[in-house]
Length: 158
Image 1 (cartoon, rainbow, N blue to C red):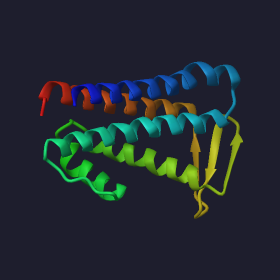
Image 2: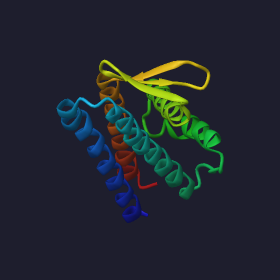
Image 3: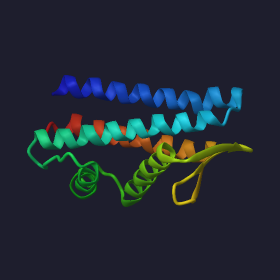
Image 4: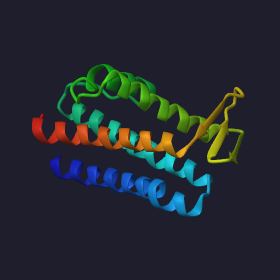
């Protein structure tokens, strides 16, 4: 298990390095707002992998059950896992916002660039937008989440 999770944490770190590079290096040079959607995808991927890793770890230690429904698993993560891994209520709210934003992006009938934003029009005609400051904040949350998971798993050993 330790080797497997180490490999998964390395994948998460690689995904976060990619997002970090796009936010701090690539975007300032290219000023291409469509990159912001790609950064969101990388951040979402890292958060999703972190949550899945925690859920699998907790399942292997017989503390929770895992289901095929991601919404049920998110609820289990929020109620049973988050406190054990020192996630705050604010962390959970922000993680859910990232997931919702990513899902809006994936199902959006229309997206466009305006000034320094990438604008997502949702199915119900709500407007969400991605900005560099917002993505930097999401990136920090994703990094902190991965760090909390890795610290708890390597110090608790079950």
